[in-house]
Length: 169
Figure 1: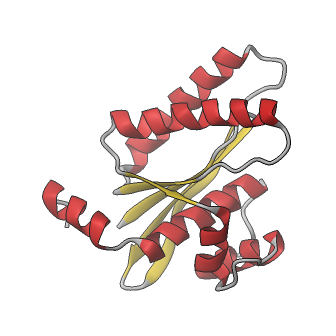
Figure 2: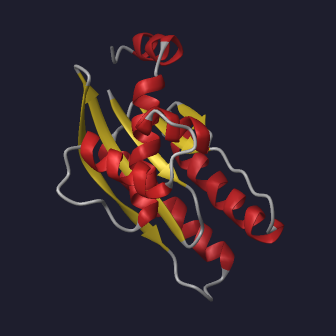
């Protein structure tokens, strides 16, 4: 199974593609789509959509896992991140990729076994699970890989049913 993880944002969108076979993880590719500050926001959204569409076409994942948004303070930032998240979801939807959402608590629990793990712990476990020599940078990329790992662990009957229906399993 190939899982594509996304850490949504509008300045930096972290992404990571992993393979999960025989209870082993392998990083297939990872990086970040970065937009320039002071660029028209609609152009930033278009750039995110175009870049992620191209990456998704290359990776051809079986599923896309994305972090569910949760903001307490800055509503203006939350709205912009939500819009960027929307174009990301649109890119996956247009390519027929099943979409799954996870909370930060679910990701931390899946990767470290502890829902209140700190960011450095999650990043280190992500590095170890993927057998990488270094933690991917920027942090958004490591977060995207952790989200993909979370989905690989959580993938159950719903994903298996979709894959069987599509002939991929």
